[in-house]
Amino acid sequence: MCADTFGVGVHVTDAELRLIVHVPSNIDPGWTDPEAFQSLVADAMWERLDREEVLSGIATEHEAGDTVTLGTVTLETDGTIVEYNLEEAFDDEARQ
Image 1: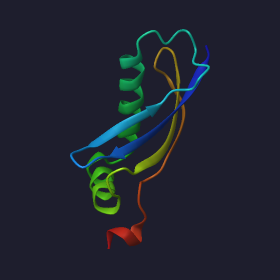
Image 2 (image 1 turned 120 degrees about the vertical axis):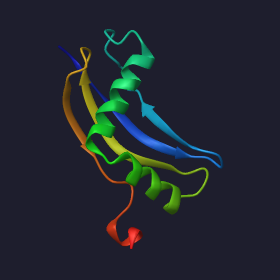
Image 3 (image 1 turned 180 degrees about the horizontal axis):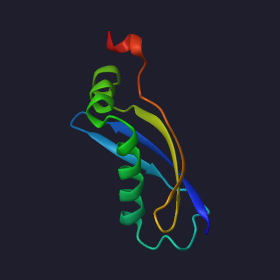
Image 4 (image 1 turned 180 degrees about the vertical axis):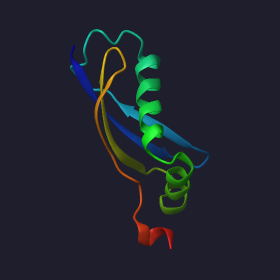
């Protein structure tokens, strides 16, 4: 099975925080439903990061127009997580 690596981040607007999934240009043809793989990527990310803490930190430390990169999630087309590299969106000093 082939795996694809998706970048994940959060875009800050005046009204909301939007989850962004960056799709590779040479994505496996097994991904037929964009909403399905975006949902899988989001679920994998939030299983590994504290959603409330990350979003609160982004809202506090970043301005409208910023896009904060959280890392990558690598998935096979059956939804199996192969690898992930995710970071908190802010450092400990920013929370103090």
